[in-house]
Length: 355
Ligand code: NAP
Image 1 (cartoon, rainbow, N blue to C red):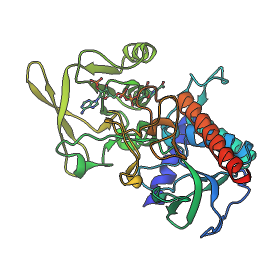
Image 2 (image 1 turned 180 degrees about the vertical axis):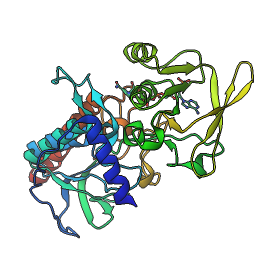
Image 3 (image 1 turned 135 degrees about the vertical axis):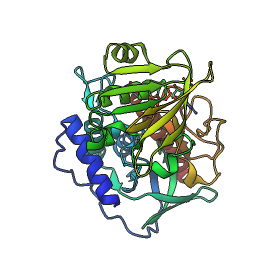
């Protein structure tokens, strides 16, 4: 089931992005010991731009980073949110843009070329109360002098009637993964949200759908002007303003939705074949089980002008600590900063030991 899901996701993403993966580059130490006795200098948890940039910098600083990239499970694809992004046009260095999965593949390969070791395994828990820190993966158990957390954020769902029953039966958080499925073709699809993700989902779905309705709770979109312009220029897309979806109906697949206008309080039932949520993200911190201080929005707290968390030698980079910019380029910047800070802190310990 999981393998089927993953191969479908990859197939769809690759066909959508015309991305031909290159032959996989071998990680220098693909099978690290199951139970390593000596602590790693740096363990990086995550697999998006923050994690791979941290890996590049840490490897080039001779810190022999081990990267827990995550395993392939339903609704979670190693590589982070760029794996479900079509064209990235604002990442410097690619004048004509680059497809999200291709950008991730490049970063991963660069990290491996630099000397990082990749482990396709999810971290189940981390003990940050002892030093060296203990990282427990699905199969391996490692210790580390410093840890960089770059686990990103996961797409939110709305808790309305019908969602649990019809999840993945016409309801999704990823148009690029699911949008081209036969039962969405030439049908009326709905996207919920008013940010860049919602615009991107709607634009992507308009390639296959008969009509796409964006349901937004306000009378103003949060998305960038460029995205709004593309949406308003697309004859297949409409925006249903000041409205929320209150119910999704259907027996074995999505058949209709109920939309309520928040101003007039009028509700309407509309035929629908699919609903795509684009209502923000929640930072992936569950495996930390409350060991690090978090901000009110769930991101990991860091010291001012630093990636260091409230626990010394533990750093946070990318969307797991940033709810403001949330861009691939800012995530990469934080990854660089975290690796540099970890390197400097480890150098200081080394210096003290040899004094
Ligand atoms: P976002 O900007 O936080 O937008 C989330 C949207 O969901 C908002 O419009 C919000 O409405 C709506 N929403 C949240 N909770 C809701 C609820 N319970 N019911 C109904 N609507 C709800 O998230 P995003 O669009 O995923 O973007 C995240 C970041 O990634 C942004 O910085 C964005 O610029 C970036 N991004 C960039 C690109 C690109 O450049 N190609 C693509 C995707 C994302 P309100 O507006 O009323 O709060």
